[in-house]
Length: 362
Image 1 (cartoon, rainbow, N blue to C red):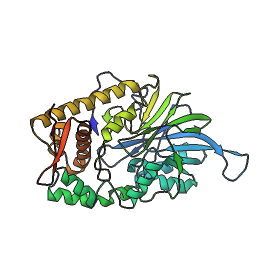
Image 2 (image 1 turned 45 degrees about the vertical axis):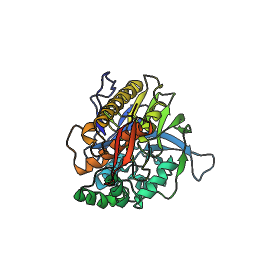
Image 3 (image 1 turned 120 degrees about the horizontal axis):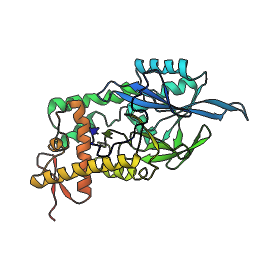
Image 4 (image 1 turned 180 degrees about the vertical axis):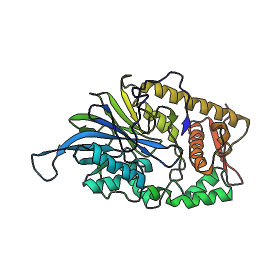
């Protein structure tokens, strides 16, 4: 994820407030904000507790009061301890009734199995995300291993010591998502999920992950945006080894269209950063950010043919370590592919086995 300039400031209703790990903050009636730590540069994830009521699983005609969890944090000792503190101090003696996961990335999915087992609560997520989580947890992953190593190499990142590190990352996802629940309830685009007597519409998103689901409550004007709409950084949008000719950036930008006509007063609850208002403004900023990067990349490929690895300094103005380069490479390929599949660049495989992109003749 990269920083994106904000020409028009967003509105932050809770600008000076943050929930400490193991505590909660109410951001709307029946909507609690949790913030869990992460062991990377992106050092936190926002999770949400929604007051809920569902039919009792064994008693006909009886309604059970409790909570719906949206996203979980990674599976590590600190996150489990934070959840136990939440349980003791903030659940008001009520159970977790279901666990809803926006997408399969480790910071969202990691503790789903633990919460589902602890509370005998079902997992709700889209099929694309669930199946991708199962594959990644079993070692078929976009985060490391032999296929990822070959994918990066064909796009110009072929330094032996770096590739060996990438190959060794085959266990990266399972280290934070040690299990995936064996069953789930399927979420689909435009489904309506009743939570606490209010209707939340599923808004599908693509490009960041296989079939991301955001949730919009028109009655309360609240959007749980997951990673599709963040206030101060641009979501990582990558092409991966499993879909080597993907057009992830086009999919991502098309997905934003589904959110850009929400009322300006909508409270956006993102997975990273602070809750904000001004979804259309933020989407305009993101479009401008990617337009600028695409323009710079097109200009660079006019001067000479570039591989995705050679294009990294065009897109990223700072030094990158190996971990950061894995994400940056995916983004570089995504930007090049949008221009290539849009007819502005051509792609050629060189004698050295590396794809390079150059501007088409107009």
